Image (cartoon, rainbow, N blue to C red):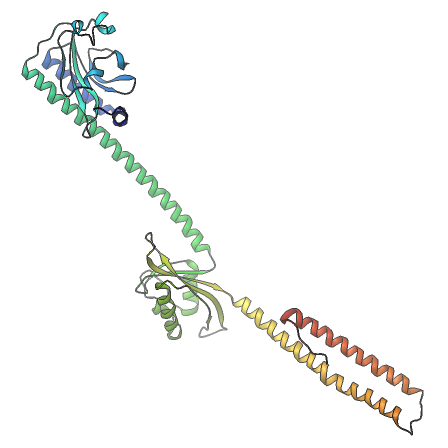
Length: 383
């Protein structure tokens, strides 16, 4: 039993034919008309509502007709040749406009065009205004020609599909190339170092920053396929092997890595080793990302030096400066307790000055303590 929805999907594949194929089909229907000695022969494709004439002889400029008014609507439901010797005597066709009115069709013979997947998409047929009686040779010719018609139609569809696929492939390739160029532009514009290594430690990809780094610090040129360890010194090699091996086991490692060129000051990099996974989530390589943190490290060292200096100052202020002041205050108390103590007008002034000096030292110590607290947390320097 014919599935109309599936048949219509098949029809959609063949509704558009190239000009070259149409010419070949026209040659075939002319040949069929000559073999069968009929005035009208045609190739049709039938969709939900319309019968479309893809090649014809004897129809003039007619391009289509309504499906329910056609002979071919019955042909696509048959298993082989549909032969109508006299349409005026056949209840299925007697009332068709083309039978009752001009051109007064009398005879019809049609062969369904069945695709490779079993769908009747249209017909190869002949029509005559007179009663037809074809020989077996003519009928067999009609059967054979219908197969050739279908072969041409399917070939045209296959060629169109290949062209479309090729265009899609070219378009996708162009898009991929554009995306790759954009990605590479971003990749190379990054100031960070990016290197992809394979399971044999070979360089699979790298960016411009990585190339500049290797040349600047190791005086070597990085290239695809080069072994990673040939680009670095012996000290770094063992650490690289360890971290790359971890990444191939799925472990992400992040380290601070010092670089000390033969000449010049040392530099620091924040380096991450992480697995690179393929479409199946399998590890296909290791991505090494490095960020220059030299400035941050130097800033941190400078802050540490400042803190140490403040700590030393605070210690001196808290202990070494306050010690003689405390001694003077103690001496003043001892003098007051001496039984031979004789009041002198200078003593109160000395005592006030010593207390002011002690208060000033305390203020300085408290200020130092506050600065250290802001940088390092609470301290306790004032006793």
